[in-house]
Length: 368
Ligand SMILES: *Cc1c(COP(=O)(O)O)cnc(C)c1O
Image 1 (tube, rainbow, N blue to C red):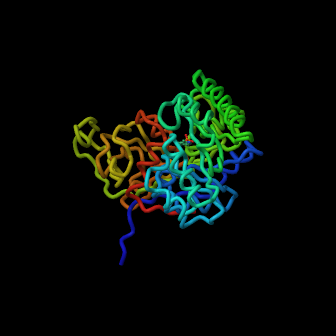
Image 2 (cartoon, helix red, strand yellow; image 1 turned 90 degrees about the horizontal axis):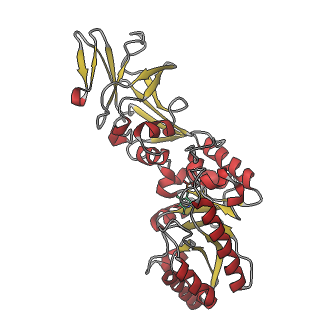
Image 3 (cartoon, rainbow, N blue to C red; image 1 turned 120 degrees about the vertical axis):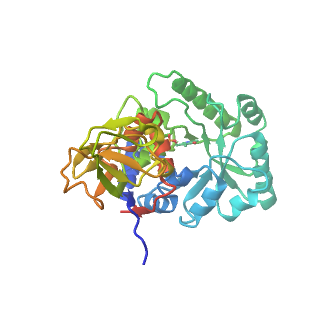
């Protein structure tokens, strides 16, 4: 006999695909890629990847080489899989064996890939990443100038696109976005001139794509918006939340006298109050910093949390719910239409990305 767990994390792959399609339509004829790093933001790259391929996605980005290798085993060969973190020395053969496309983030990586191409007498695809103001990844201005002056450094490399990453596209007022865009367009023009042919560009993440399609260029790289996380703090993107977390009530008690609830005894409820406990805690990604501001849904009714989030448990004040409803075994909606990952994130002082990537670790995921 297998125990069925008292929690259920359900991923609606159709909603992920709908989100991708809406973005692909929004930016057509530019291409819409899919960023599936960190196991598709916790939702499961081995399911999300093929589902998105099925609706037309052909370009995928991971953060790590290992993630890309794993993804290759579930995606057909005509899917391009790229590794954002770059080409580390000694890994060239792995890229070739699995048909992966490196993102070249400095001149050393350009040299490695060009040498490989020359040795194999083959044209090898790669993205070239430049830094336009985030100062995290990609060639800096000096390196890029060297490349423009010595384009033979790219011998054997088939440049899929020049790319860069926006630091502040989520924030409508931030001047850096336009600065990055202008630097990027100049760099793209300069590279085309230096190579004597046009070069595709890829600048926008989810926030850039929803803020202004002019930021996209030829290839958008959305991540969070595929998974229902709103990318911009000043506009609402037309996307759906594919994540639902449910848990069963595992114990219910009635307080005989007024009593304090949970670690730190932070909350006191009057005599006669009823408290239900469910097996979701911060070890599951239900962040402790959510505090007890959140609600769950029981039988369509909003139930407030009471007391601190424990490692494996949270407590609910079910005093207002009929005794026949708040009973062990009843399923409670913890995350879903009522409480999105974004809402929980706001309560916890973080972003929806962190909620999603934290959720993935402990639960069995079910796909619909
Ligand atoms: C993570 C990442 C993305 C996707 O960003 P979202 O904000 O999740 O859309 C795109 N490009 C790069 C380089 C990234 O690191």
